[in-house]
Length: 401
Image (cartoon, rainbow, N blue to C red):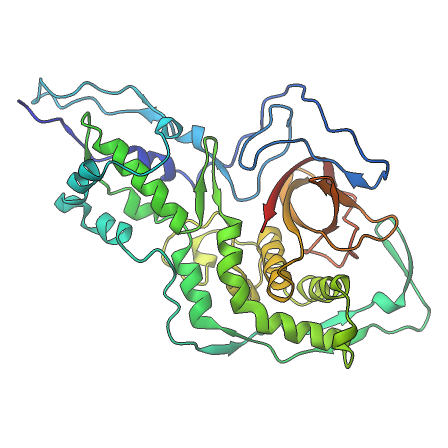
């Protein structure tokens, strides 16, 4: 019996190889019922859509940092002419069609044993958690910020009205982060695109499907989710590993903001203090690609910096939102949090939603029937206020635990 033809381009490769090239497409237009809005006109009720799914009613929304799996479907290479009895081509390969779960152990072992897959095997069999190593603390460069909350008398749209002669408070804190841990988390997170492009398997015997299932499972260990439609960061995975590393910074920021009365600070007060720091101290810096990462190892990280790296280098909307979520979670594990995908004009955007006390007139999003206050991290909007260019009509919510 002639063995199946070798195919050095697995479905796993086709899934990830073009990540740097294509953004998530806009959803097709259709009608979808909406949950009835609560009586408070400032509370937005998002369309009910499972996390990672794309509602057909969304005509504009794109997820920040996500790409469509459908963009990577291709046609399998035909069997080699020298092997007439080889398995026939499978036609269109759909990465989303392979059932999720544990890969077939025997077929996967066969693929891992191939000499061409030595690098893939080393990656697949590596430890599932970041190797934090010996702590090595370095100063956070963003240790000064201004707080003008006490000076604001009212807001009208995007305009602040301040009390004449009132000067913002200049705040400063001694902040340090474990750079070794930050680099370890950043290094573990992401897709090793170059490595995945070298995987080999036998077409026609099921080993390619076993490899794809193995890659999908390993990517979960690396903070990457593959749904039926999208490939995207696992924000929960990142926050769980980053919150302990930013906890000391978060406590120092709250201490600097509240002064000598840390025991009197409310849960909302902590959120305000941390939001003010992330807004005013941590700079907005676009993450364009692997050359902007803390660890320059060529991995695709969906334009996202992990929180420790954001503390050291700054970041854009999703990086800063996830940093703020991690800092809040590190000091108040009971505080409900969610990431909100929305549009800022024509640009995919992310803001944070926090289940703290909401004040009258603040913009909120309803999650499981409860109002979550919206927090913009890229400018100095107060809690519960976002810029006029933010479209709150189409939202997708990623709840954090």
